Length: 388
Image (tube, rainbow, N blue to C red; front, side):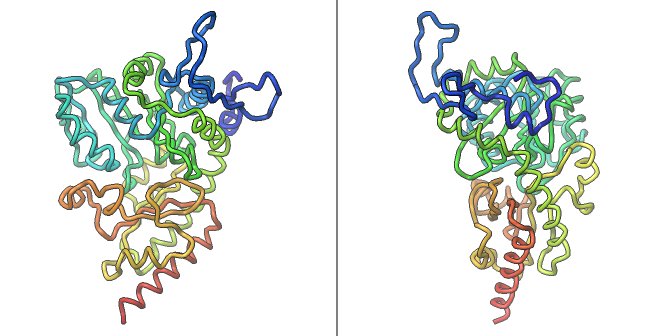
């Protein structure tokens, strides 16, 4: 299907389908072969080369959603992050990143880059001045994550793009928390968009995948490394991801709506110290989020009163699942200090304002009244326990 000016739901539903020429089925056929002919063929296909029929087709959908020329899909979000960074960073190069990052990305940078002779600098905040002062003559990449995990900070993408272009620097964004439904960084001049496709693209907590979208020139550079690192995705998972993405817009919009109501309820709760959600006027980046995002996100974080035991609170929940991942149709919650940011030291977490009482909440598609009821029940149970 040609792009034209297709709506985002139409892109999700139809672009990147594999045509079933034999039986005319309504969904893409699944090609499970790991071995393809090489004589008298237009394309020599091999799963590790990211070009099986299902892989190739799904990349078209992702590229169009991110308003890019091309895309690649990987075995995980971290495979996408690590491969993309290493494709553009070599010995003696330098990268600038915000201090507030997904724990896996932060850990990859601080534990692995020295092995490759790659330098890095973290900004404490998100202003132009803070990014600008970290840029060196050997800076090749600026990598950002917005909204950030887990405090939902927003980085000004237009500012980052202009700053990078002044210095001839490649820009990369982890767009996972927003998804293409809520934010299209290419509109602001960002070069490369990265996703943990496990999250909103997959949306059902049953697959592991990553994605990168960019120009054909940049994707070729990433592919040249990716084929050697071997982080490709199995075709069955590719097929499941394509199926899941058909409903991505519907799911994400429902999660956005629930998150808005939940954030407002939490902000008024006497046992909640602070709520981090960019749609709230109390959020430090609220105005920027309004300008930059077409929707917000189904992700939020909140700090419970220090008198409450986090573990007891999580155990008191009945419907909401304390769970490691995010963005599924079911509501999930976790303690960043014990999961996503557990690899950071207590000092590093403190520097990023990640307290032990902070909880990251992935809002599902349940009735929001049921989500609120479950949280309130846990608050009441734990507060009574503290009084005994």
